[in-house]
Length: 300
Length: 288
Image (spheres, rainbow over the protein chains, first blue to last red):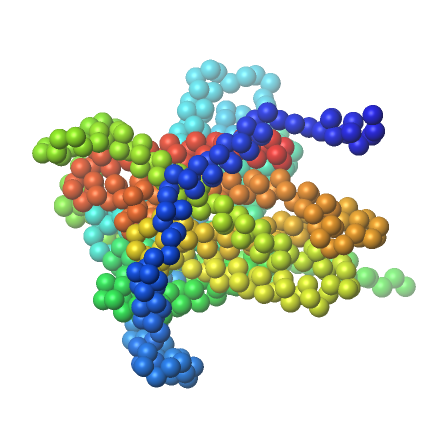
């Protein structure tokens, strides 16, 4: 038997992974058959005419008769920008900023109680006398509850949170901000909890060995050690917040999404696309700022 | 005389340091944003109507509806739990169907956008730089528009069809996959690829046998995570008229059938938790 053949036979295999691969393939193929795309994808003359009309209507209104002209298109866009798009873009940005800060605060406060190495009777260092069963049980309950809350927070999409909270708070900016904050708190909380578990445990164990209390370890050990990674996560999630803040406006508050929905309702597809372009520009600028900030944090 | 080597000196953090500056910037941005939105913590105290609604809504969290709450139901309508199952099934179908074209497009753009296949090879320098910049720019454009905004656009163009939903999910997901795949390929170890190149392998061969296998586990794990995101997105597409879970959440909420809302929310929760567990288990086996 050649070496290659022997290595091939000895390669690590996992039944679970092979099963997962089959499930994924069947799921995707089954979905293509089940959803009726093949019937749907047909190109009927009516659909072609609809698409033709739609493509005609997304051209800026002043140019629909005359043909394309960059300077006119740009001045048309700047008029819309001055009229409402600029203000809506600023609102979108503001929503994303407040939301990510709240999410960071909530996530950071919940995270330690979900971290396995922190939320137990003797954090980071096993003490000679085992803790009483009651203490172990109550710490376990606390950490399981916190993890459950984090899962619940991030399983519900931002849009659903916003939809539900709008009924509660009425038309202020809070429902959008809180919706983004709750969902992202769930994500940041879980990431941070995993991060605390992956910190250099000997450092923290040494602090405990020197007699530091739980709060002292958190303040002088966990926070300085994990601050940079936490900021990286924060900026990554902020990028998604900017995208989501645009969308949540469609529920009726004055971010860019509001004007997208408004233009669609009036069948002014050119203005709808203009608002979408403003959103895309904001997202691109946000990604650049975030990349820059992450680079600064990484070097620090 | 010994002159100190300044390049070895430990740099002091300065008055606040770079990290402090970033933190200050965050605080400043937060203050500006709070002022711009006219956020007032007092508004967080809901009105009486809001309290009533919150009470009615959250008190049903422990008692999700098991049958339809509407009193006058036409004969022969689908039982609620079956309805929830069907809606959850459609959510999975939309998400899974969108993953295939996203993956194809994402892999193509990701490979094109990575630097690993050309940066070490002088012959490919000019072409490689051009192709990878174009791929990256295209991916940025795709993911700078959110899937729900793509959905609004495709709804206007195609109407409520599965095609519109899958196209809306595909474009931004392909852009995100492309970005992350390109990063993963570039960060994977390159020794094997370099050895193949020295032995005379072509760019495609270097890529397929030297670079790709090292990046593969990470890419598969990330694809599963995106599937979990696609589930949430597909559910939310329901708010725009597609027959996924979001559609029924919105309909029941507007009819004030809060028990039904919780039934559908729990269906989504179970879906996401199951996929979360599955992708976690796969990830541990792939990367562990």
